[in-house]
Image 1 (cartoon, rainbow, N blue to C red):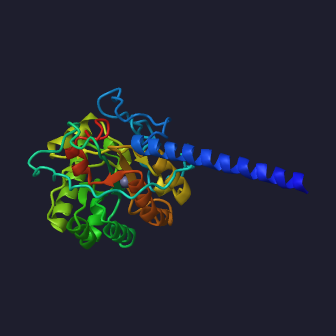
Image 2 (image 1 turned 30 degrees about the horizontal axis):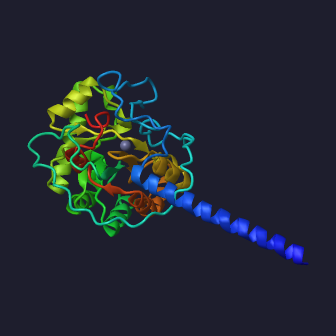
Image 3 (image 1 turned 120 degrees about the horizontal axis):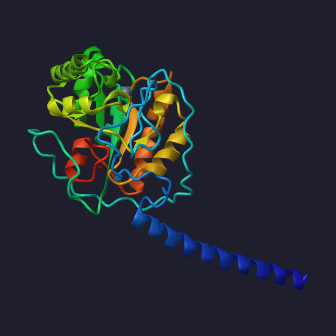
Length: 327
Ligand SMILES: [Zn+2]
């Protein structure tokens, strides 16, 4: 009886000791992670790695390209279904303390010239990232996303397809009115590298016109469908006073990737200066339901990790955008 009790007591003491040790290790680890941010993503291809060639390579047939800084490949055709990529498990993330309020960013300069990057990091102690939503506007998801962003007080960037702007000008207008950046994503979601020079130019100008008509804004940002561009396309984009915007994190939401897989991918691949690719329309049936379901929580989780959401123009002006993503 007595022996048993002592054994029990010893076991209890051992357990308490272990718990104390675990708490100390846990606290130290959390503090280190907090300080260093982004420690988890050892497998991430650094977007600062310069591109091998000027312009991006466009492989035959697929309509997709791979650019350094792209984590999981290029933007898909809406009717392409692929298995979501495996993303490394970030491990147990500990909830951290709430963020102290940050002073507002200096607004980007007036748009007389196309935004260029990189610049000097204006906010070395802050971790800015940009959420981007392609292929809208539409009559459902775009407004749901706008509602979430409004509730969270987060600004994002929408790359709009011209035909959709013509269909839903009110939604395009709402995007601009609520302070988000509006970008050009071609007239009909065409692979611009496969068009004649004139047809390619028209894809850009018609969309610029539609965006201006709907929103009163002249877009200075362009994202090519599938991220597919070559030197000719890039030159035309620059001639029309726009900057091409790639991404560092591809959520593959269009493919119906599960909320859990997208969350893991975003938590492990988001870094300071990152640009996250999502969609507000298109893709596989009901795919964007996952985007809408994930958005409120992933915003909070990334904010808990110290990230601040800004528009692409703000990211460029901050000097934190990576040279490989903004051309
Ligand atoms: Zn697209």
